[in-house]
Length: 173
Image 1 (cartoon, rainbow, N blue to C red):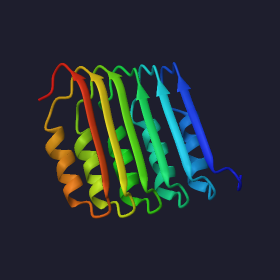
Image 2: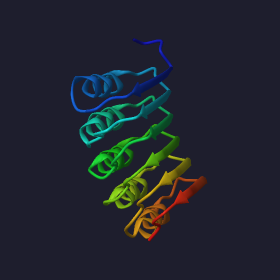
Image 3: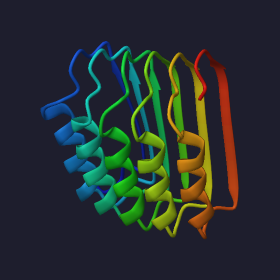
Image 4: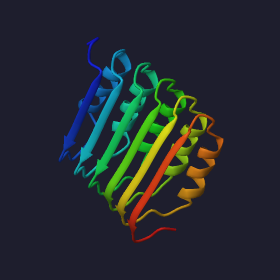
């Protein structure tokens, strides 16, 4: 499709985000040259392993027209894993994205190296000017996430606007 400029995709109540669905979205994103805005919302996912993000990341890294990405993850049990590494790698390679909104709501575990992986990608990105990161109602945000994310942001040379919102945590190390 050469005329589609905006796509909003919502995935609801998916037990396993591996497979053809995310592969096809990633392939489509890689090949599309007219899409400028993508809004992806994942609701009530019980196993959001990193495979979905690998395919999305591949597509994002290859895409040359996308300027705005909104990624919202709601009500996921466990967001540990490689999802942020794939997103970070894509951010490091993408040269068209100017606005990123990442929102995570109601996640019981957001541990691992997510902030370092995302920060590494942000450090290398040269096109992103606006970043909004919102995390609400997460019961475990352990680790040195703030320092890792901050290190990446400090190295970024293109960001002009940053919004960081963190609400309602039970464990904020």
